[in-house]
Image (cartoon, rainbow, N blue to C red; front, side):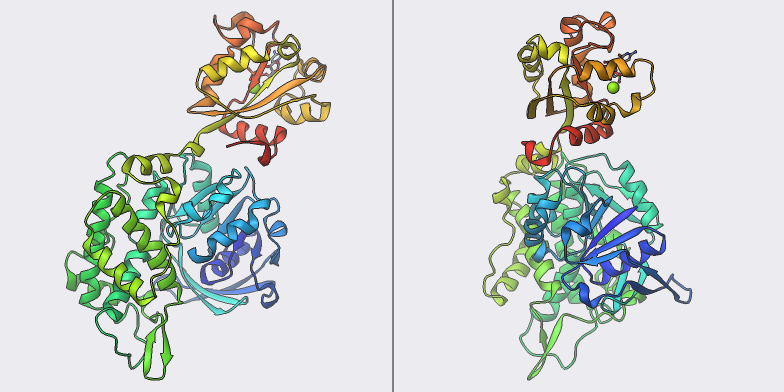
Length: 501
Ligand code: CDP
Ligand code: MG
């Protein structure tokens, strides 16, 4: 596969070397390409075994998005939430329908922040949790990581994750599962709950400086566990208030960490060996160690993590006293930050709106239709469009054009060599056609039903082919026959800018 990784931090570097070592072509998009070497060194630990050292060569390290994205199968984005909006704006010209963005991790507001890319047809997938525990040894040169035993992901506004799941298993070499809805990812009580509970417990009780930088997990305490349990309960209440989405994959942290009580959770978090050396986001001040509010743990997990969870609770009119308490403290500490993501800006003001946003109009299936030279030439385009519109399908793109033999060969590639192929190309290139992109619920199957059987003699009454087709070749209309062919065929006839989604 050809992969682009955006962001050269712990996770990005680990993925880059992991994939490159499996002979995938890896491009890295970073603002600091000059600090990278082509060969990256890695050391990987698997529980209980000694670390293994290896290295692998990257294909390209660049700050040029056009070059980095060029014909890649997947773009993995590891950027922190607070830079995602600017990223989306900058790279929008280089994405289209073919682009598959994979957010690692998927929570933190990507489905809002990356809207400029989604509007251009890019597909968005998010990981429930990070796939490794990873730490850079030297920026742009070496990294240590340990694999999580499995991964899971969801598609934003789409259920078709089969091929992506398969590709992720190839890339990460661990089992991958798909979760029903991106909302499961957003509501997963990972860092937005875990980090914020610990930070509030550490810094929210008193303003005095610390003598040293505390270990984040190894020195975890019961106060942090108590807050975590409360936040976790409030997240579960959000899930219960959205019964129409399957949120059964939003696992309570009590279950995730197999800890029912406060002391059990504290003991568990203190004992996870791969996390034992991680320090807290603190910086040294004149009087000791103080919180570093510019750190990703604060900026991302409060402003994009917990604050988005709180807004879901507010939208659903759930009380959520602990989320409020923790966010109020943070807001006070950081001088009333501006809400980075406002759900109301995305039309979300009720449970209905949440269903709509995550089920979403953009998830509507699309299909390519051609009104062939016979029907178009005879002036049936209007009648045919009316049939589609009356059936509830929306026209997202339309143009009158003449097919060339090259275009016909591209479009009908799977028919090359069939006995009818030369006659088909002659016919399709003989006069102008009208190309359309239609969208709507189950549009691929339903438009083919409206079109009728390939051979008009066999087409059902009332179908377009029954009404307007002459014979097996001059059969009035074409429509894509699957999601895969729709995606391929739409791109043959339209640029992303011509499709009004
Ligand atoms: O368009 P549809 O998907 O229904 O049919 P297809 O089997 O994919 O074939 C593509 C096109 O090739 C048809 O729509 C016909 O115009 C042409 N064809 C033909 O001329 N003779 C055949 N025996 C089969 C297909
Ligand atoms: Mg066909």
